[in-house]
Length: 527
Image (cartoon, rainbow, N blue to C red; front, top):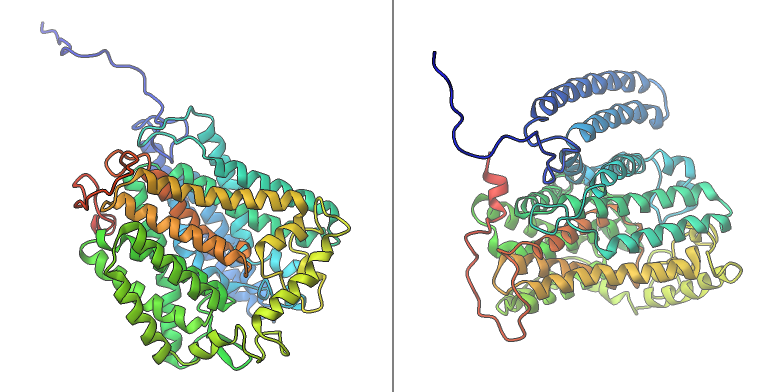
């Protein structure tokens, strides 16, 4: 009778809880594999059935006249499918939303957020796909964050990162916005705006925890640039058909892409262009070809939006990348590109002159753009006199003025709509967004992938603050989602020993990319 002897080694222990799998909550690294695979299959089949049923109902609804009844069944089915995905593959759920968020505004029922209130009713905004997706992000993201925060923080690569002070800044701003409801004459409008703002905050906090190692950094960045496919394809097809989506202001025709406003399209492209230029030297193979093509087409479309604030921010952001990465040769390319743009892009020179030129711009028919902004700011500031502590209510400025527009200044918006409390919270938020980039730059070395990510994000953070002075950036939810991706990547690289280095006061020699840091192309080329 033979006996089996146990090989030397540690005694097997019960299955441990994985702290590195963002999709696992209370499951071991192998114990839940079968259950998760089964759950994925059930979610896929169930989602397909629900989507098919919703599509059928939506098709029957086309016999009516209201687009709401056409969209709602389909959106409900998609929402159920996304909810199933969030329960089984939370990381996949987040990345899928980031990949497709740029196309949601094509189904928008309301008008531009800064437009006339007649096209911006609470009912229409509440049924917008972007608002419904935001609610889904809030619910799923909050539950996932509760599970993550229940574990002890682990600053090592792959462990649960400790929460940054950015979390405190977002919570403070949300609390100030909620308090503004007590001063709002239309609480439903303010509540919808707060919901959209909360979705941005949750996305920031989720990505801060989800992007925690080198692989997730590459994946998140690849997904962010993958989101370019929808807007670039849609806009290119519009030009090919001879009818690109555009809006007309005064004598200027400005392309909007899949968004409702040219300014939103421009800000989105500006962030992707600046960050893409920063990481371009470290992207290899087919991914590099795709990135160069995407950046080139994005640059052309950015110019055709004729959005001065985004164009200026892009130039300054690229200059910041040049300085932070010491890529001085890039200055020649920027100068040549600027001259070509002024020469070849119709209306660009006139649009830049409109800052001080006496011609109608938008809804400023008797004044130049700068003068109109100064006048409008002087008109909106007194709105907070009766309620200086908590403001007149979030998103209420456009309902209080004759031109029915937002303040075109996020700092004034914060003060007027959320009071002194909201202004303080917003200033703290802006500071923390910039601090993340500053710390990432200090922790990384010139000539490395980590410095590229840090430089790209810090440039984007500066662009965000700069545009907030003369635009409604905090209202551009889609833009802030991708800024959140870059912020999470910058936070993550400071925790990776292979890309981060000690703080150096002296000039660091340019080094080749370490072999330990794969390029972004690995994410796209690996099966």
